[in-house]
Image (cartoon, rainbow, N blue to C red):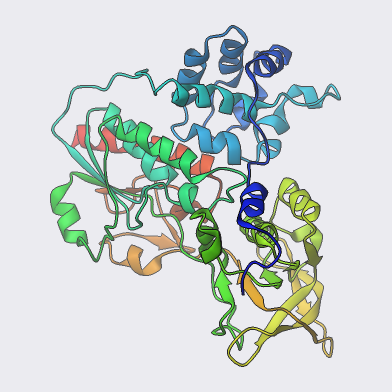
Length: 446
């Protein structure tokens, strides 16, 4: 497997960002379209509840640092969210312009404009930290939940230590989002912002291996878990061990490293699953030079987890969708040579209300492929969770108090994908910030 279709320069161009930044004139013009609604339905639709009308008004009046401050007061992961959030399902989807039959205000691009300017200005000091209170918090994971929690705690006067197992901080923002949405450099800018508040980040440290859980508990007054989820679940079909089978997150991580010659991709690629991560993997393979990429999904288009934007993006990239289809075997001797599938029909609804796929007897068929990428939903790190004393797990999620984010172990708090099963970056950013205040309340009483 290798790139035969595109040169390195062409591949680099293929992964350029989808939506270009606003020019100053365009940003001010777009900001002037905003009605600055009193009830701000856009704010209510944002999981971090950014005061969107206010930050847009500040752009319109030329107060860009004031705009950035308004955004950051609610969301420490504002650049990634501006570029990777499904805005048409959130803030822009709630914009009153939709009701008027007009194009919604481009809130995501305006947020990016303000935050880009803040970083280009050298991250001037906008927030004052409280005096150090002598207490320490350990944070496991440097993804959006961990970073947001760390930033908030540092400003509240805590010593904060983040432990990250990978070589670079940022979690999925650094490694797991398609580069044409947001770059590794975007994520690392946000990391630098949070480090600027005095947060210490140790990379290459795996809790439970490099440092024990007991050492962590002895070292810190409270712990925050923001580890997110792991790789996709396995297919559990014959041939899964063949060369050419890879998890979607690993494949996307390889792309994000931007060492194009080292990224293996097939000529004919099958992606199993139809969520947003599947789309990122499928479009990534296509942009690397795969001749044909298909998404195989066991249910119909109506049940597909990917949002409308992702679906349109995939179709524009020429991705083929095979609905009501399930893989039953990956074929080949040492390398992937094909995938055997069976057709489905939809049966009765399952516990989530989605109709179950039912195999159609005798409908098996073979698709010639030389690469299989699986994206069946990320799996929780249960063995890690089970290593933490008195931590309650229900339905593969860490149980927390809805207001404080405290787990059943009073000293441990959690947020992000490990408590919600896998949502957006913006949800994790909100969780981390709220958990910081839960920790603050707990340690003040203690």
